Image (cartoon, rainbow, N blue to C red; front, side, top):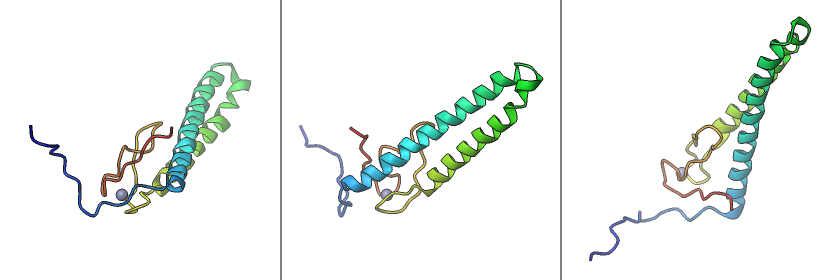
Length: 112
Ligand SMILES: [Zn+2]
């Protein structure tokens, strides 16, 4: 049986340090909470707008707040780059970090 056929790129970057990972995890954590808070704001605005004209006046500030939270989250995501090759990291909703860098291939392990 032949050995593992996986190629190990020569000159691969060293694994990320704990400090680099902590920073990425912290940003991902904030991103997730900003998105959750924004979704809660949208939901609350929808519920409040159904409760009469007086309560509906609260819906607009809630919507503005939710959009602001989404905006801050989007800026945070745009500013997050691979510590090795500085490629912008695009993730999915509620999960900012990919498993590895799409450019240099360095692994981004999950927070234990
Ligand atoms: Zn990279």
